[in-house]
Image 1 (cartoon, one colour):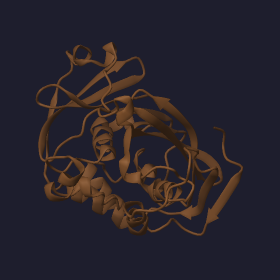
Image 2: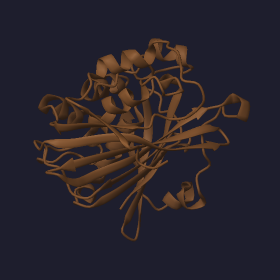
Image 3: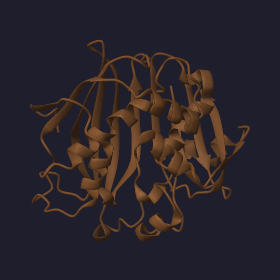
Image 4: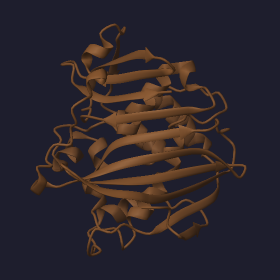
Length: 290
């Protein structure tokens, strides 16, 4: 799917709370499986200083005058939900699983800059576990491209044996590849989902408490995948402070709250590979920063 010809210019980012409520309410779905053929765009987006401070605190970033490479994804989330809330989007949003993210930053974004943010669906494909959807986000600063991301979500299909979303790690990304790494132990508190929700506006009930997560099949609340990724990037320090960066991640297993996990890295040329794994050595997340 190419960039849609129809562009809808919005005066401001849609309110996050209203978008979450719309996705939770039952509604008539479009027939078929075609995706919305529209780009949603907002100009003059400025990060809220208080929300950015909360984001840095919960993820571990220093206040250095620039947006963390993962933060534009937070800014764009209301647009993602608005696009998926359109009448011509055929799937329930609450049934989608975030499985991968590819981020490319051309230059660092000053924290006070006015940004142009646009989103559109780029592709849909059938896979063994169901249907994958690619959502493209682009951010401009001072009229020039500065950041973009490809977010891949999975619509699981039980008919195709899609009850499990886990993917087998490639051999180079397995446990043996990190054997020489010095592991760092993280204690992830029970309130991590609530703290990240206050920073990002994402109050999906699966992240808040055990009580609100159980109806969705989780014994306890789970961490936001984008929190786990942001926490990894913060831990990488100076390696994540270059202007031009590429960040790739695959989300493997939910991280139950609270948990004790292990963070590991290894270098390969210009890339830093990283992973977060459980006490049993099973990966929650694997990625690379180049």
